[in-house]
Length: 216
Ligand SMILES: Cc1cc2nc3c(=O)[nH]c(=O)nc-3n(C[C@H](O)[C@H](O)[C@H](O)COP(=O)(O)O)c2cc1C
Image (cartoon, rainbow, N blue to C red; front, side, top):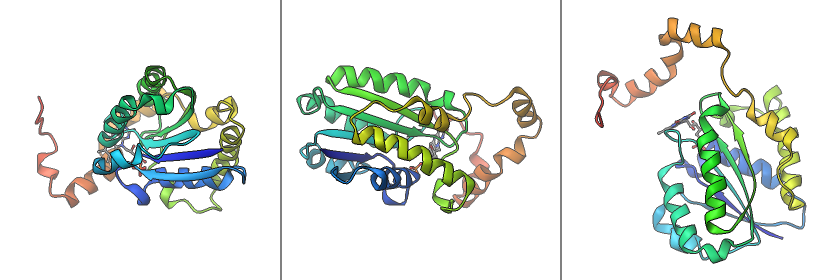
């Protein structure tokens, strides 16, 4: 079987999506022929769409509660070429910075709807929270060991043209929502939880503008 992997991260090869796609690739059965495309550059979409396959795996992060821009633009290309995807299996892996799976539920619904729209078979949407740290994990870390184990399950499903198994989906889901006491503490001490973001916006000279509402 030929499998095309779409990496939809704006970070391309330096992304957490890349970590996931590599793990999937490494665990596929040896008879699966893989092609990988980075879809962050919309100028390449018309070339990428021409490269057809028997099956597709798409991995991308949650951006502002939905897909990154280039992913949505690419989906529109897919819709224009929907005969390419008709009756073909597509597996999705979406991941987010926030730990709660709930953030990705709307996108999950959209992806299932999108597959119906283009006539493809949605073979599962795997959701993962707290993905920002992925690139920094060592193979020996406890989290990576568990990720590896569960990725094997997903890669097996893809290799066998099966829907994603519920055990792995459940593992990657982690928590649907943060426990109420944690939310309470976050509200009490927002500075602790905002620290990472504050460092980034300071680095980009935007700290003074952090309360701006350009679209309000
Ligand atoms: C512009 C931007 C928007 C983001 N929006 C969200 C969001 O709405 N919800 C969320 O949980 N994480 C959000 N994140 C975090 C990313 O989903 C997370 O860092 C992810 O691991 C990035 O994956 P990548 O390295 O494959 O691009 C956002 C990150 C950026 C840079």
